Amino acid sequence: MLAIVFCPALAMAGPESAGGKCPSGSAGRDFDGLLLCVPQGNERYVLTKDGVDWMAWRGDDPIAFPAKGEPAPGDAFEITLARTWLGEAAVGMSDQVVGKGGFDRFMSLMAASILDGAQHSSPAAEFAVDLPADESGVTQQFQFEHIAADLLQGEPAGQDDSGVDFILFRPSSGEERPHILLCSGSKSLASPTHMCMSMREVEGHRVGIMVTGTKLDRSFRIAETIISDLESFVIRQAP
Image (cartoon, rainbow, N blue to C red):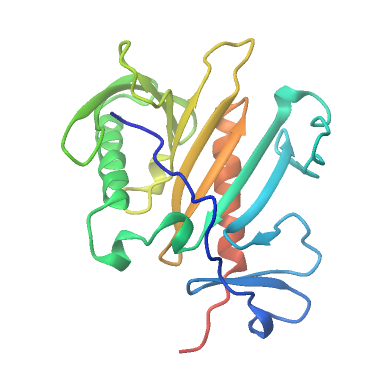
């Protein structure tokens, strides 16, 4: 069955501080060859031994993360939280590095299936897709619809407990580096909280993102923003 499979280790040996490798005033870490340097003045992205510490948004606007024991400010239905994991100990190595058809290949097959279904349906129509549930070839049917320009949302067809309640996918991201968000959560309008996981890639290194909130499309946009920001923090060392 489909499942949200990313589960970072709770204790691990983290990467070394970037030290003098980053520009003066910036804070950085080297995550197994992925050197990130957060510019001076950017206090939101706090690099930890296993990634980026928790961040918060109200709507699409960044806010300070609530202190421990304090309630989230404002309307709870407008609050989204996100955490990011980096480094081999937390998220493993990407398929192209290890030379295997593993999780990244599985996600590309899922993206190809969704794209094929979308291309054979009219832009406004719903469509059903049999998605690979794992690497054994077992499939699970999902019903997809367009919820915004270039954004699809799928839900399991029937009553099977797939472990995933929603899938979000941006077709323009393609098959090779697909942006797929796998989510579990309530479909109740009274309590629509969800938790989503996305496995992306930055400079050939896996990045795991967890987003929790109440609006799926907003969580998707925030996950995209995180990847875009991380890409802007990359420092490429001279060979």
